[in-house]
Image (cartoon, rainbow, N blue to C red; front, side):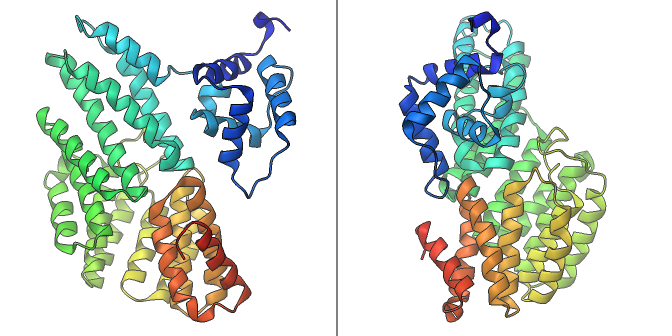
Length: 402
């Protein structure tokens, strides 16, 4: 089959491998690393033969193989197998360097970076920080290079996008359990937002800092930062307001204020009823805050308020309504449900639910989920002779926790 007749996805697959200086055997090793021990693959010779077929376009990989290839090559399925491939970070960097001497126009590079930000949000929702952090940091490097010569309106547009990427980096590092980097990137996003007086991004960095304080149980900071984020609430889009209000509610739950917590959650739920999101944040920051998301947070607040039965009931109602694209959020909700089952004295349900959540955590590299599950593991230690509990604790030990 000549190159002209070779499908575009096959050409992109071969080029992606060559760009990374990978032999076919090296690509097979990356696929094995991605699959892990739980997903045994064919022998190396067979996989190398398959790669030859795929790159020639004579066979197209199935959904599972496509997933492994995308993860091994750090590309989305859209970039590798569907439609027109977006420009890589290295190509964007070269284009940025061409622009730097004169900086006469930034439109095309910024357009690609803007579109790739939405794709990276989707990647994060599906795969988590392990597969998203490197790409986000590489795009920030491109934007930092563009900032050097940027002046006037060009600088404003570069800073606006740079702040968005930096805030995304803050979230990704938080989910990965690296709070030092998370706080560093939140500060960077705030600095860039202040330079151009981007009030929405300033508010969103306050939200992010409040969320970071939640994980450390700094209750005063949680409430103070969330209140600061809402200082100009009339200027904020509805999804953003919904997300910040539910963050306030979490602060009140930490403070043991049940009535204030649920009053704010009711308000957030009403605001979220207008949210329609497909997982790529095209509706703006906070567009993940759907009614189902708010109810999952309500369940977590019930758990924080030491009322596990209400938490179980709320989780069980909310989970079926969560959009499928938010796979990692579902994993976090399952971890909370496992904790609630343990709290109400149902160790077997807690263990089986925890195993399901752990599968998501391992695939995504989400330290937040593992932190919750570690607590569940310790609470179930008195039931360790139950087969389901023993299996969960063994799985947790495999990730280096117990």
